[in-house]
Image (cartoon, rainbow, N blue to C red; front, side, top):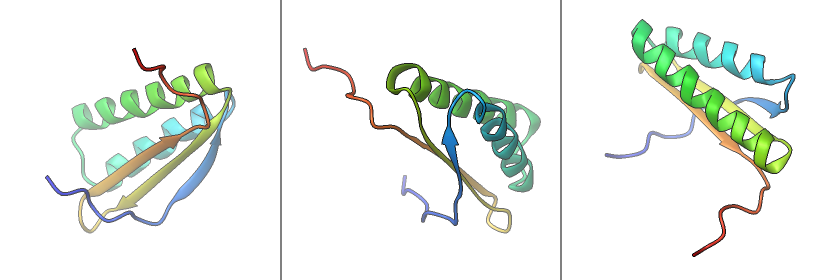
Length: 88
């Protein structure tokens, strides 16, 4: 499965206050892309979990929500500067 080309971002700093904005932008992007209610819920849940992990484990991070309604595509990217999981 090919990864879609990155779309223009709506960037947010991820912190406790920004979590709601990430959720709202993800929901709006999913609806604009034509995702079903169930898929929208799944995407919002996954995006919030990723953003929450960035806050919990790295103190903060960044989230981007990109939407191309004409192609039916929504992308959510969450990054942080955490140390990651230690190798076994």
